[in-house]
Length: 337
Ligand SMILES: *Cc1c(COP(=O)(O)O)cnc(C)c1O
Image (cartoon, rainbow, N blue to C red; front, side, top):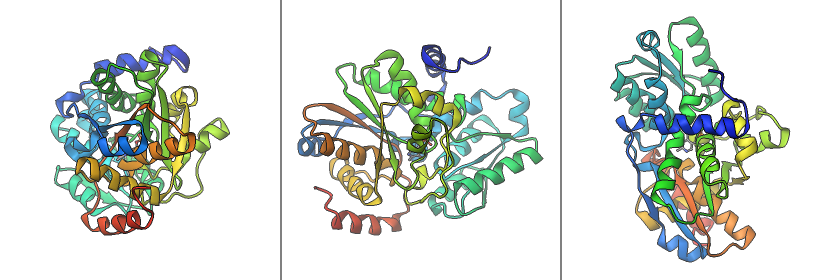
């Protein structure tokens, strides 16, 4: 069956895929948790969707497992290859081990060591190649062409998008009451596409707001251009979202169903990591704090009060040593501002 290309038929196609995604073989249903101090300070009810509590410490396990589970027997036997800034890598490694598939993963040389260890400890082969994700991606695509391995995109694939969309299914079940907006971190757009498809099909009045690092704002660039465009360079402090071009499959949803895209600075991310810590005693990686940083900016700029706002707390894979830098920046720019 051909996939619809836009509008309600496209959303319906994804909603069916999301409802059928067998992610709970590996993923857990994460809590949707109040952030009382932040809520009080911002005068809005802030809820955190704790995807940092997944095995592998990010939501990527959802999309990776759904994709690998849908491969044919021949594809499974040939093995998989992927490129990843680290979190998708760990998701693919774990999903591949669970399904008995051989996995090879190309990661940028700048990948935090704990993500590399996370891949190798789950039995996958990790190759470090290229200064940033786009170079690792190019190399993985080349190796895929030269071998029998199936390439598994970290975001630009309908099965991956549907797997990530299960986050939205959980949010709407966990919070059947009024919701004003869901803030979603954006790298290549797989997570926000899955969430937007599910939410806009069922509860279209809920706003879907993307939050990007100002050093990798590829969705905002695509929205402005009307099509995916390649950023000339990307910064990798928020390494989980350091992507130069939004995925085409994701953009087909985002261009019509994402209400707004915000960008935040590295300092705003450091402050948000502290805010999340203060409310939950959990530590997020920079990309994991994007949505909270976005909520703070949105509330400050629009003078919003009394709304219910969800932030996807998307990951916790940060090297322990980096925390010193995060704490210093958070202190300098006043996390409680
Ligand atoms: C991958 C990732 C994102 C962004 O997801 P995309 O589907 O690439 O947009 C956000 N946060 C973390 C922690 C991630 O690993």
